[in-house]
Image (cartoon, rainbow over all chains, first blue to last red; front, side, top):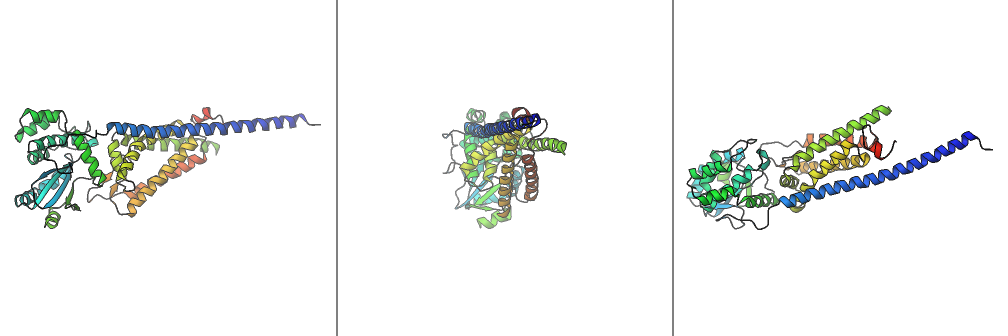
Amino acid sequence: MISRAKVKQANRMVREQLAREQRRRRTVIVSIVAAAVLVIAGLVGWAVYANQAPPANYATPAHASKDRTGIPVGSGPVTVDFYQDFLCPICKQFDSQAKSTLDDMLAKNKITLVYHPIAILDPSTNPPGYSTRAGAAAACAADENKFPQYFQALYDKQPAEGSAGLTNDQLMQIGASVGLTDSGFAQCVTSQKYAGWMAHDTDTAASKNIQATPTVLVNGKQIQNTVSDLVRAVG
Amino acid sequence: MHVIRLWGGTLARLVLGVVFAVAGWSKVTDLAGSGRAVNAYRLLPFSLAKVIGAGLPFVELALALLLLLGLATRFAATVAGVLMVVYIIAIASVWARGLSIDCGCFGVGGNLAPGVHPNYFWDIVRDAALLAVAGFLFLTPRTALAVDRYVLGEA
């Protein structure tokens, strides 16, 4: 004779067993759904990025270097690559320290100075994107053979990190101050003709592990950002 | 004891959820920069680093959502823990190779300017602490104020 209490207990055990099974099954299903959510999130990120990525056929400024990523000045035997971001204060500092030395080396035809504007500080203005706009405007100046002059003028008027940066109108006015007064330059700046070129420059530099500014290479070899190191490396 | 596990787990979810939300959000607005930050570790070819850099912020945000909701908590804790282990290994390897980078954990990233010293030690301490929190959550996935209570049934 089985007691009533024992039957009750057995029933309860079966119920609990079933509930545990059900919980386990639900946990597995919920975990699979959660995993799918994470995978989809990752794919969404990739899709968003692929959508933002610049087109493969982008405009390259006139007089760009052979690999299309820089604006060369001079034609000396030693190549000095200067990677800079127009928002970067240390770039401005290095440029002001090294300018006379670089000008002298150019005058003596010792170096080819290749400027590489890159945009790694785009998030550091509000709204973002000053680095790209400034670099693209400088490429417009390169079209008219005024890159070095415009480069200096942009650094003279460098906005602070965290600020709004300069407007396209201000970028045009700075152009006017170095003689870029024609409508072609203004049109080039407003249309951001070379924004895609900036994105490719930045990407190409990153693929060479150059993602800090300023970065200076002498004949392909990175040097310390000091005038004395520059002089020693160029020889 | 039961109460401690219940609400301790909730606290663990909130801590991890907020950290992943902040980390993901800081990178999601600059996916190209995020790819460069991954590339700065020099562990992956640039093309792969770009994919990881674009996907990771969204994965972190989705994971933060799971944790804050308390949905699939044990699974989310596992993923959080695995991510922390990956981050710790990556930072340690950069440290061991003597590279000078920003970990890019909360945006920025990339090589550091000369004279700026990296923070690898504290980055690793932080990630190890978060790994411990994820471990605790893995062991106590049934937490208060969690969607799991409704979806999975009472524990």
